[in-house]
Length: 126
View 1 (cartoon, rainbow, N blue to C red):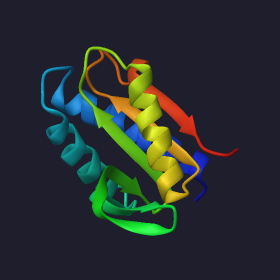
View 2 (tube, helix red, strand yellow):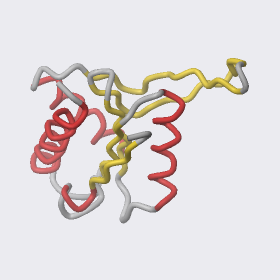
View 3 (spheres, rainbow, N blue to C red):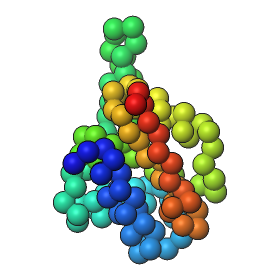
View 4 (cartoon, rainbow, N blue to C red):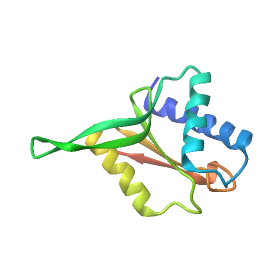
């Protein structure tokens, strides 16, 4: 499955989570866990809280970074549960894409009335 095909499946799973749990009000971690459970039900490989090494000028730093969700080793999902998405959230996801050499990330905000309102695609190097 390509990144683009996966993104459609991920968004569909997020819509189902929102439908099942209801609108805004829960913590990000709850939505993240439910999204991973939904993707697992759809037989899509998913990893939560993925530790990623950070390389600075050829040196691996002692500190690592954690991704919210990595789907099929291709798409990074940043889960939010906020009133609105800000440009800093998109910049954060772009940085995550760069340090992992991934092409596509989805910023999914469960804090909106509908998930469709709260989804942003972030692309690296396409």
